[in-house]
Image (cartoon, rainbow over all chains, first blue to last red; front, side):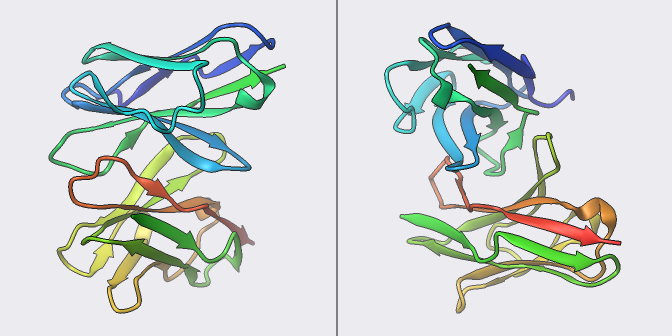
Length: 113
Length: 113
């Protein structure tokens, strides 16, 4: 299995632009998680999905952030408009209901200038 | 409520000497506990997990951790450090029925030659 796939690996954009991060979970996993990692705040859960349905989005910072999971093999995290304080590494992870450990993707390093 | 405290932000050891990374947890229910490792510019990899079976858990790369309920601790150890162990280590907790993981702030392990 290829593991969790994230794209792009690096994104540099200017303040005010829309940013879309993509994630493909491991085949057969029915839960998907988006995390953000910064020096100041460490690893924070932003949102997670079970069977493509958002369950807990209480970690989403504000309305500029949105996440979708249109099918079992694809999810997006969108920031519109982006701000410099959104600069971070964004991780996607997936698992099944039978196993509570999560499998992480390589992350997307976002820089907003 | 659940939380994790990693008692050391940085640990430095010499190659070939033992490693001890400390973690204390708080959980209202019987927790599941994990250690993840993150090498520079990489994603997170599961080292080991405790899920109410044996209290001494063996993981990959010679690491192990012992669950001590009386001390609410889950310290990570390795008898002999290798240069390739230099990385950031995260202690993580979750509870039954809770899908999200709660991460500690991380411990950066340096291994000196």
